[in-house]
Amino acid sequence: MNEINTGSFICRLLNAYNGSYASEAEKLHFARMHGFAEAMDELSADKPLIRSQAARIIHEFLKKELHEPDEPDWGDAGRLKDLYDCHVCVNHIAQVCVKGIMSPKQTDNGEIFFDGKGTVSETEADEIINNIFILDQRTEIYK
Image (cartoon, rainbow, N blue to C red; front, top):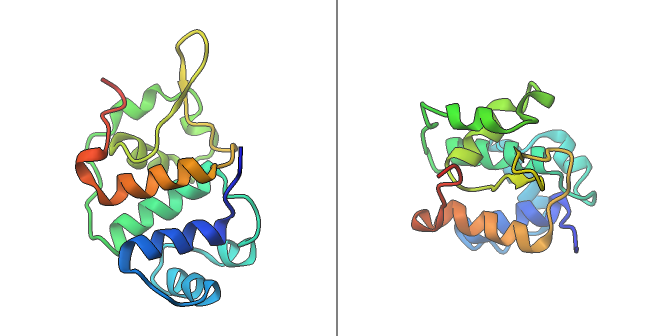
């Protein structure tokens, strides 16, 4: 699996959003100034993107750039066995899952989990970004 790093993910996200030709540093700065990235994202731009970090970036991007409201009912996300492993991440993870932007994983016995500490692959990053902008491509993951 080819992992994507944080900087590359933010660059791909912004390229899909506005076709920006800015440098990676400029895109990271833009993301931070617009509130959907944090200082740690800039500082760890060359580190692999983890799933909980991706959920935060995506959720904040949806709210602050696309003005997409939160889903009021995210009760189905409660089925994720690891949803509360990161208390700060709960709403971010729940929103990207119930919106069908990021898919949970499944154990052999059928339990679903988010795997917030897992990394995001290049392929998964492309799927996530497509799901952000192509609404009819989003999946109902709990059906």
